[in-house]
Image (cartoon, rainbow, N blue to C red; front, top):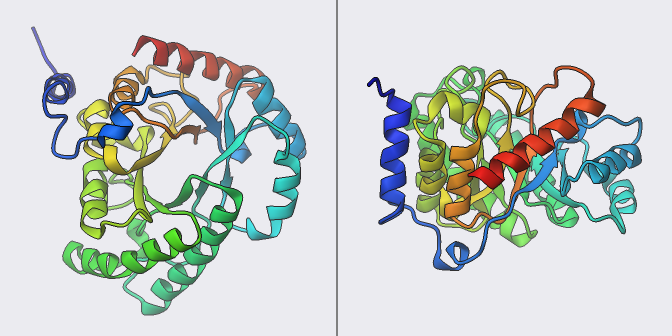
Length: 293
């Protein structure tokens, strides 16, 4: 019988989770809680001419919240608060929107990133967001090697984390696939950074599109980052809606259940077909996979 590498390592991760849950187990307080699938979506994916119409659709389709882009968010705070008032929806993560790159080889770009990240963190805290998603650098944004880049990142993150705590928020490091970033490609790598920084203002997220390309096991990845995991992005193999190709989310959902995951899972993807039809189908697909995990 042929056994592929992903299946073998998934089984190994499951066995390890049943005993020690790996090198970075979830805190006992989280593990004692029952995980729940709280679905949100990035604002731009949801159809609607106004924010109110988008929120109406999210409610109608059984979502639990919405994810906003960080760029220009400060100017929208009052309008967002007004539209969200009285609705059974929360604001999940705030996605990037900053300028520059923390791991740039140019000091001016690093300074720009620090300034704009801090600004968006303040807005994220004001809105009660789960945190602000950041990528240290896309491949085209730095000429530094791994050692140089990591040192600069580790020098800057304590200040970023401290500011996040001060304003009631946090940054969420996002691992990407190797086609987009040479640095930070696995959840465990982000977990190692979070452990070293040791600040509640520096945590991580997992994107199941990138994870399919880089992780041998979705479940193992989530277990490895359990202590610091505060957001999840959802997309199919081809980066479309869950359920629009053969991407299976049950292994990852099983990992989230094992660590007592309490935060949001959010759509970040394209959509094939009519969004008014396909997005509700994706919600049903994800809730079915969660129940089966």
